Each structure stands twice: as structure tokens, then as C-alpha cells.
Amino acid sequence: MDGQLYAAARDVTDRVERERLEREQEAEHLELAKLESIGTLAGGIAHDFNNFLAGILGNISLAKMHGGLDGSVYGLLEEAERASLRAKELAGQLLTFSQGGAPVKKWVALGPLVEGAATFAVRGSAVRVAVETSEDLGVVEVDEGQIAQVVHNLVKNAGEAMPAGGTVHVSVRRTIVEEGDARSLDPGSHVELVIRDSGVGIAKDHLARVFEPYFTTKQTGSGLGLATTHSIVKRHGGVITVESEPGVGTTVSVLLPAPRQVPPPAQTDQTVSSGLRGHGRILVMDDEAAIRTLVRRALESWGFSVVATAHGAEAIERYQEARASEQPFAAVILDLTIPGGMGGEETIARLREIDPGVKALVSSGYATDPIMAEYRSHGFAGVVVKPYAMGEMRRALSDLGLMDEPGSSM
Ligand code: ADP
Ligand code: MG
Image 1 (tube, protein in one colour):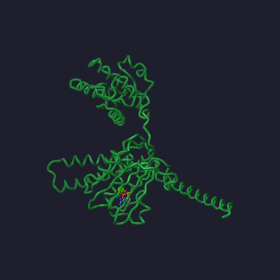
Image 2 (cartoon, rainbow, N blue to C red; image 1 turned 90 degrees about the vertical axis):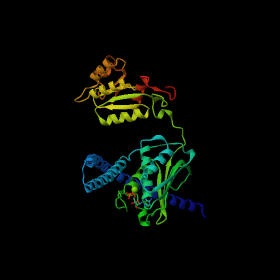
Image 3 (cartoon, rainbow, N blue to C red; image 1 turned 60 degrees about the horizontal axis):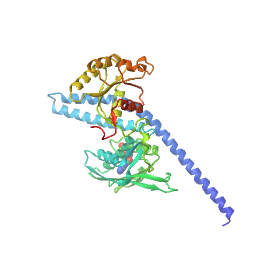
Image 4 (cartoon, rainbow, N blue to C red; image 1 turned 45 degrees about the vertical axis):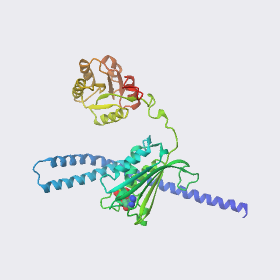
């Protein structure tokens, strides 16, 4: 063939291909934007919904405890409870969907994560899971909660496709994506998660719709499982594919980029060596439940055990109890201002009367409060400013001498 003509033909092919790709990307972009706005709406509703449900479920269980209930009344309450629990699951699903925003990535061991989530998804059903993980899986940088959600959703679907029971096969392994891969993935190391069932399968004309939010063929389905899964996988830079043959079964594959890398030790903390583990009990006082939960999670993940209180009187009571027991507190973290209750300043004064050696950190959202600057003269050993940078909290605790290399203490 004439060289010039050939080159021109190739140019045209390239352009057509490029335009096709651009169109695809644009469509994908729109799809993501659509999912995102639905997510925001759904998340807002789900949040309020969850609070109402807590009230409903709490009262149903109280009613069930009532003595002398007619058997049929009890049955009705149980049914109401079951329905509420389903609603709660749906609200949870919506919340994850809406939080399917940017993944908060950490280095996690994928094998145990997949195994745990898969087993959990079929608990209490006639379906079994067989999980196969390869030894060289190692750690990957993903959002732990989101990937657990992906596994949960896919295994749950697989189980629901086999109403008479059966085995869901789950495998996860490392794989290399070659240059020029058709699935528009970057070349390099990936992990591949495959979930296979021998269930009812998916009809051909449904196959294209399964990722649509609210598409469901189930009586009590939400149609959000695969939509959520899809957005999570996308946001991890991966792809998800479904193959199915009606009456034979379904295989879902998820490919996630997973460079073979040694997790940088600085990643978890910039100030204190991440190998350090906390030991002992810590008493936390904060009037905000959300803060108590947050601090508890962080401290527990570093190895401490935590008792949380909402105000000074309660904190003093717990401190005295613990002091009289075998397990006194290694330190206390006190919020400076407690609306309508005893705050940090008065609490530390009282605690020092009880135990002159008490180790205390003061915390406040008001960094400019004079007590924060003169914390030592008030009897505190350190300060942490809210909202907490957890690295700072860690450093403050390690400065108190409460963190060690694992194995070097006790
Ligand atoms: P839901 O499970 O609430 O229906 P999903 O988004 O998880 O919502 O799934 C959407 C639909 O995709 C299901 O209703 C079902 O028709 C189909 N589907 C998904 N996974 C499977 C599977 N493993 N086998 C058969 N059908 C499936
Ligand atoms: Mg589902």
C-alpha cells in the first residue's frame, strides 16, 4: 500500500479511537456526577432516618421486654423489629454510598479483610463461602471500610442468587496488567478479587443495568449494592466487570491498582515512630459524644484502653474507682469547657487532691484560652488543641512516657 495513504488512514483511525475514548470518558464523568449528587441527597436522608430508627428499635425492644404480653402481640413486635432492622441496613447502605467520596487510604492486609467481610456477608444463611487468598498478597493501600463494603455487597448478592444454598467462591490474588490493556487500566501490579456463584444468573437485558442506582429484581432489594460498589471501585482507580449466564451463575471481578511498595513508615505518623504502642488505661472527658468516639478509636488503635466520660463529676468518680482498683489510669485527657458541667480546670484541681501524681492533658477548641498557654501552672502535663491532629495527640501521650516499642514493656 502507498505509504502516505497508509499514514493518513492510520491518522483517521487514531482520531476516531481518540474521540470514542473522549466520549466514553465524558459519559463516565456524567455518570459519576449523577451518582455523587444522588449520594449527597441519600446520605442526608439516611442520617436522619438512622436517628429515627434508633428510637423505633429501642422502643420495640423495650416493649418486647414487657411481662405478660400476648403471644400474638409479641409476634407483631418481632415483625416490626425485623422490618426496622432491614430499614437500618438500608440506611447503612445509603450512608456508605453517600460517603463513597474520596477513599481514605491506609495500608491494609487484604487477605484477612476479604475473608472477614465475606464470612460476615453470609452469616445466618444457608450459603457458605470458600475464600482463597494467595500468600504474596501483602498489604495494599485502600480504604478499608469501602473495600469491606465491596466484598460484602458482592458476596451478599452471590448468596441471594442461591436461595437454596450453595457455595460462594471468593478469590483474591496479585496480577500484572500489561501495557495496552483493554480495560483502560494503568499497567502494573494489581489485585484481582473474583466472586463466583452458581446461582440464578442475570438476564441479558438486565446485565447493562445492574450498576444503576435503585435497579433491583428483588422484592426487598435496594438496588444500591452494585451502584455503591461501582463508585467505590472507580474511586480506587479500578474496574469491575460482571459475567453471567442465566441458570448457571455469575462471576464478578474487581481489579484494583496495588503497586508493590513498602508502606512508608512516615505515613501513619510524622512525629512519633509508628512502631510505638501505647499501654495502660486512659480516661477521656469530653461533652461531645462524637469527639469521645473519635478519641476512643484513635487511642485504642494505638494500644490504650479507654474510659470516656461526659463531665467532671463523672470523670472524678471513674478516677477514684480506678485508683482503688488494680487498674488505675495512666493518664487523663480533659476538655477545658463543659457546658453546664464541671470543666477541665476544676476537674484537674480535684484530681490533684486525690492523686498529686495524676498525669493530665488539657484539650480545648479555644487555643487562645489563657489556661492553654499556662497549662503547667494549672497542673496539666501537656495540651492538645481541638480539632485534634491525631499525630499531636500521639506525641503528647508519648511525651508522657506512655508509649513503647512493642515488647519492651511488661
Ligand atoms: P439488590 O441486591 O438490592 O437488588 P444490587 O445493586 O446489589 O441491588 O444488585 C442489583 C441487581 O443485580 C440485583 O437485583 C440482581 O438482579 C442483579 N444481581 C447482582 N448480583 C447478582 C448475582 N450474583 N446473581 C444474580 N443476579 C445478580
Ligand atoms: Mg445487593
